[in-house]
Image 1 (cartoon, rainbow, N blue to C red):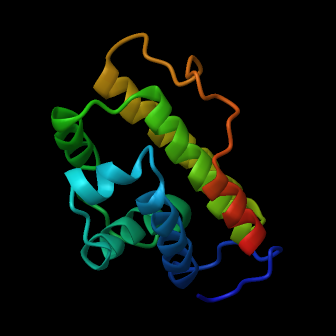
Image 2: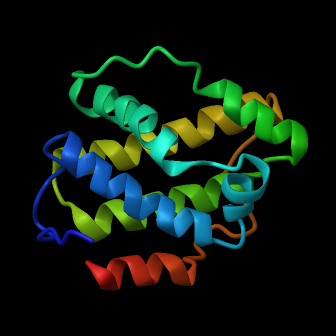
Image 3: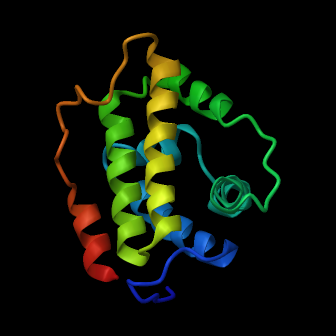
Length: 153
C-alpha cells in the first residue's frame, strides 16, 4: 500500500483511488457494514472503484463525469436488509478515519463533509421523513478498524 504524508491534501484521482481502496478494505472487514458489501451486494472492488472514483472526482474536483443513480444500489441493499442510522454512522466514522489517516486540507475536509451529507441524504430517503443519524445509539463510538487506519498512516 502506498504511503502518503499526513499533511498532503487530496490532489487528484490517484489520491482518490488510494483513499477509496483503503476505505473499502476497512469497510469490507467491518462487522457492522461489511456484510452489505461482501454478502448482500457482492461488491467487486475492481468494477466498483472506477465508478465511485468518478463520483468523488466529480464531487471534489468537478473533473469527472458521473451520471449514475447513487441512490438505486442503496435502495436495493435496503430491500434485502434495512440500512440503519448506526450503519450510516459507521460508514461516516470509517470514511472520516480513512480521510484523516491519509490527508489534510480543503479537499479532505470537503470529502468528509460530503460523506456526511451523502449519509444523511441516503438515510433520510430510505428511512423516511424525520429520520436522523443524530439519534444513533453508537454516536461517538470509534471502531477498532478506524483506530487502526489512523495509526497506519
